[in-house]
Image (cartoon, rainbow, N blue to C red):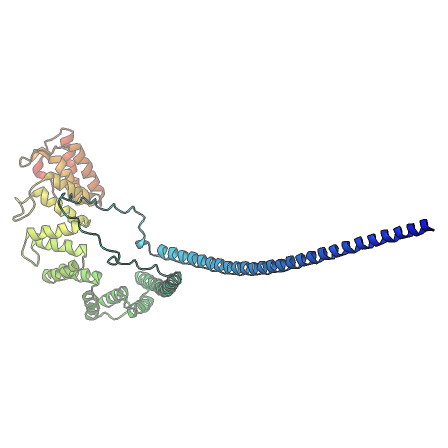
Length: 429
């Protein structure tokens, strides 16, 4: 029993010790749990603070990204505007080629300043406050506005130019159509007159005359002068010709001048030719040369005659070229007061120009130059060539020269040794 009691007491003791140990352990665990909970709470607080900071940073990042996108959008728009402005400027430059200058600009002149003497005081540089500030660059929006304004002005100018061009084209087209109608009337008037269909000719020519076309007036005047299709009325015909001649119709001027010349009315012929000459009519200028050459209606004056011939000869008038050649052929020994000294070479030059237009008088006289040559005692250095002279006489004969026929006989006789040159028998046109 004692043993059981003792054992039981020991057991109780052991249990007590165990309970006490467990109690102590629980207290320590609870304490540790409290400490752990406290640490967790602090950590959670820190975590929350960090989350808040992270959220703040994220918001800041989002704001900055938004601003960056806005800036990028603005930059993109600005680049597009700048590109548009450049394209407009390029187009404006293309339309104003006079402003382009691709050449390399010249180098500025070299500056060689005089050396500063040792004892010379170098002036102080200007202070920053005295230096003028550089004007700020214009805003891109201002540049774009100006470019757009210039482009609009150019567009309006182009539209105006196009409108004017269209109006001009229409006017030219209308004028061309009217000219075609007039040409048809001229052809009808001319053909009917030539075919002696005078009634129809008169009808067409009156239509022309009503259009202030001088060709119609000319044919109507001829019909009155000759009594073709109308009662002859010379005064009315002359009146029509006087009117259009005084308005500058060269055909009427030459007709009236030639008619006066045929009637030996040289004074009036010269007056009409002078009007024609003032209008640069070569025939009128040539005829004035003839009148002063022969003294018809005016005092003979070789100086004036030569000047009129030269004026029309320089413009290609064949007969005038012939007379200039003749002046040099004969020389001022025969033409008193002539400005041309004798020169076979100069004569040959002008005869050749006239001969190129089939002027048989010039061709005959060229044959004479080659036929005589050095045989003319008054002129040396121009070699005679009878064979070439005969060739020119034949050309002149083919073109209608009667003088050349006689000259060709003399040249053939001399060429084949049947006779001497018989220069005195040569016929000069």
